[in-house]
Image 1 (tube, helix red, strand yellow):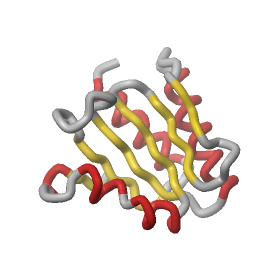
Image 2 (cartoon, helix red, strand yellow):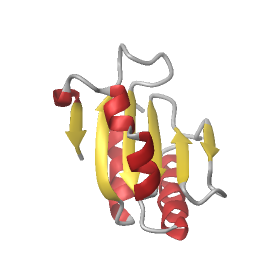
Image 3 (cartoon, helix red, strand yellow):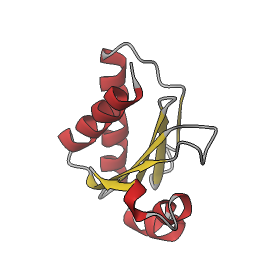
Image 4 (cartoon, one colour):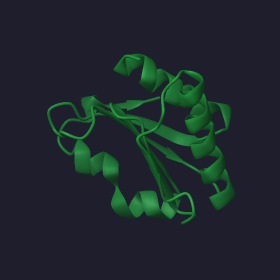
Length: 115
C-alpha cells in the first residue's frame, strides 16, 4: 500500500472511533524511521486502546501487518508502527508534555496538517 493510502486508512480508522485533534506531520527528510507521523488524542485509557485496535484492524483488513505496537497497556500513549506511517495516540497531558508537533516541525507550520 502506498504511503498516502496508508495515511488515509489510518486517519479514517481514527475518525471512526472519534479520535481528538488528529494532526499529520510529514517528516520525510527529517526522519529515517518513517515518512508520516499521525498524532491523535484520546479521552481515556480505554479510548486509546480502542483507537489503536481500530487502526490495527483496518491495517490487517488491507493486508498490512503492523511492524509494532507499543504502550497499549500503559494507558497514556500508544504507538502503532505501520512502516511509512507511525500513529501516536496520546492522552492530552502526555501530548502537551512531549509536544511532538513542535519537535518535528518547529519552524515550518505548513508541514503540519490538520486531518
